[in-house]
Length: 155
Picture (cartoon, rainbow, N blue to C red):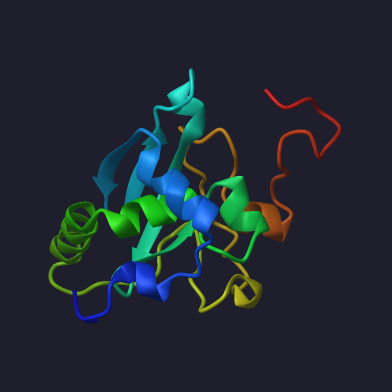
């Protein structure tokens, strides 16, 4: 890691979220530039699986509803940040996958310093078919809608 501060010191985290990130039963899968976080505290863990994006040596965003809705870091981002070995492995895998250079952009989303300053996503985005929800850039651009917001019932 390039920054000597702990990743948690660089995130805005509520005490409640920090506590949940510590005790909930998370499983982690490294898929550069993401860490897939699955919460086995629920009866249906597959429905509680989210991609946490790593950039600048910290978890910068997540596709969960809480991270989209609120300004503070979600429990999935915090869960990655407090597990230094997981974060280190994700950073190393990202550098290895990029041939030694970390690219802070991916095909499905643009990364900005804050959620309110996101760039307009490209029109050629393809959401991951394993995700139950479309990626945020597709929703923000109006190409796709969240379940239940277009008159259909969520599945």
